[in-house]
Image 1 (cartoon, helix red, strand yellow):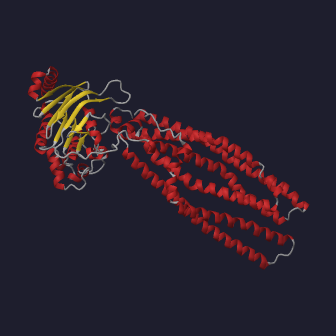
Image 2: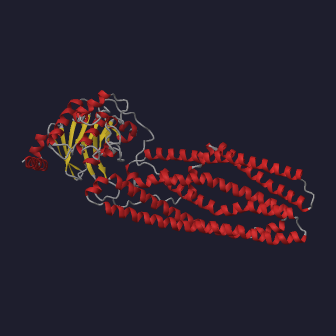
Image 3: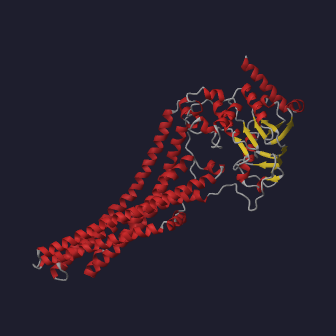
Length: 594
């Protein structure tokens, strides 16, 4: 499979925070509770160095007693218990907060995907979308969980530790924090590079995911063409690039963390050297010096966390930007501001100078097409490949937008009707049959889950697939595998047709969905449909003319234009193009029989 172009860039970054802010407000009590518990942990931690200072000073002055030291030890133990309890609370609340954000964001993302239409999915490969729903959402969750905790902890602990250090010795505190501005400047310089490299990693992961999905989906084709080796090499090539991108990203992250550690250790070195001199000079006590070192140790975590937090937030913002690009996408089809109710009665379709051109195509797929498909009429649609047959089916099924005044249903412009109302009246069988990895019965009843077994079997009988289903190992409860892999092409098409029939909708569109069925079976199915369809409007696309001979009317398309229309006998007499197509097909059919 070829590598698919990737169009999700994630360039929005911080401007995409609006995607999660409403969710954050929704769970703000949980977040506030977690932050208060985190604050309590930090405040309790600050008390321990003060107690250690007192114990050291008592020992240094020779006035310590076992009772006094035991009392200090007991208080430290109680503080430790409080720290442990509050740590559990903030982990439960804040990490739970991030999981709730992830869940709701994933739900919103999936619901939004369901609103988008064909043009979006034609531009964005499935693998890229799957990567967003897994890898990118995980990065957002990590930033909103441990990233938020680390950031809040670093700020609270950093400010509090600095305040306690300044209380002991402002001069020594100024000396100890000398490395911090250099660390801040380095972090700022590396953050932009971190963003770019993580974005590249995520894009490469999307390509890797899409390649794997495409290969697995088309595994039978790969084996038939003996392309296993080429596919393995292609996957390995993408994997090596993904590994190289990750190593380059690790280079940036690996620079931040060691330098953060170097800065904290440099601060410790300065504190020991200059603090020791102050102890010797009598400016501070030994207990003050020990407490100052303890507070500096507490400050070490915020200094070292700078790089880690920057990494988590950059990853989260990058992934959030990629998600926001999809969430900002809008369907090309939308309901009008003022809707009209769907007209009652059987469905009549009127086309008035219908013109449609796909994006990026120079020639129109349909040009000045005008015709009427009357209520309850079975109409055949024929023409060479590329003549616009499937395009017309797509437009009638409301999968692409059309200009106002081009398609009318029962005399009402289709653009004045809601999408749901139109689609709810159309049973559409696309040219590319899609089945689910489920039972035969579940696939037939997909659009009508409440259908009874009798209804399922009746639809299967019309499609001449009932007897074959009974021959399966478990009948209608037989699982057909991914995309119906256990079925033949003709069986898949007939099950898809049964799925449309069981909807019992006023309009049925069959887009060349019986091409894998033999001619005789196709004729039987269309004859059976005629008995099922009274009162329903039906459009049948077929590359074979013979099964359509009994249709009320046959429409012939050529290069997107209406070439001819009429009954089979009329077209044979009046249309050389139609006549040539029919006789060529007859000759090929006889040659196959011979």
